[in-house]
Length: 231
Image: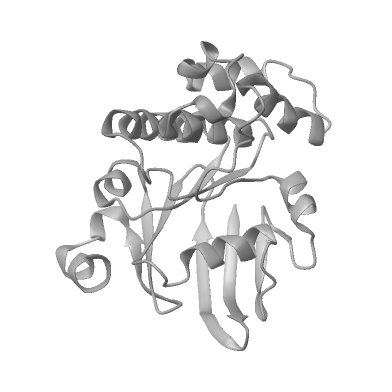
């Protein structure tokens, strides 16, 4: 579904990404892991078009995204939930959801009901301002909003950051439901190891801007964790 090949990126002449290659198969959850500052978020921003890479190729469902603007990539089927969620705090939950439909020119056609089934807590809060929701509720709103764009791939940047454990479990269960439906692939940047082990099919580990380990999630052994993930 998503292919990233030999991606290189730099900020102010300092190289951040070094020949990063990642594959996200259809109907699978792939996690990109690593300590802070190793290039994970930059990789995602290159994929969605917020950072222009120096070189490399990015493909979605067999078609190249090279040269596409961020909005064109979104319309091609990329749903992105950035770190920090970036909901609209002064709009209601319903207005936040409605924005996804408006900017993509879509009619609800049952999609709203579907995301409210995935995130039932939002159904009770449609008239509340996004800014009064808890961090966990805002994260669920951000994922629901991305799902309303009907993406081929959902890209999540640190979805468990600053969220209480019971909501983390709910988000994990929801990602598993999305995967089971078989319509959306997921690329997950995450540092919470147990969460990754619970939802991912395969993993990539980054260090100093390069992929240093990869494989099925069952192969994420203690040696890799100690060398590249523990602080």
